[in-house]
Image 1: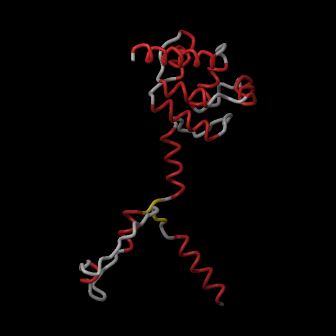
Image 2: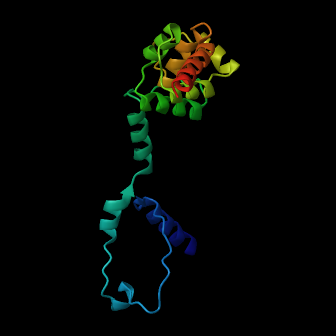
Image 3: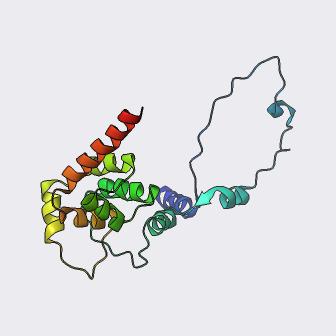
Length: 181
């Protein structure tokens, strides 16, 4: 019988709202000072568990889906993952942070236009491996939505000497800074 009751307790615990993590900082008590806890009388403190769950609760599955929905503009959620997930995510964040579109990056690489230095460094760090480059070159299905990072690197692998152009843009930018300073 104890097994059945422990199963019921597990079921009720899993049905409770999951709370956001709360990180405590230890407060060193000074024995000379009175603290609020000393002024509380037994049973005078009321704890409203429902209010705490409402204020600080979250649904783990919903928060994951919301972050994916905010990250990309694709409402269907279908994406082809060619790059390593962390690499794709970091590159997409960098593109969004610099407010740069794939076309702008490609134009800058072909015409020598200026791009933010941080973005150029990120592009060099996130260069596709030979395996990823092969997959990007062979991917021809336009009906499936690629993530922003995959779209950018797919366009870049079709530009001759794209990563050499990034090196050149970095050199031009650093040369201008050094010569003016």
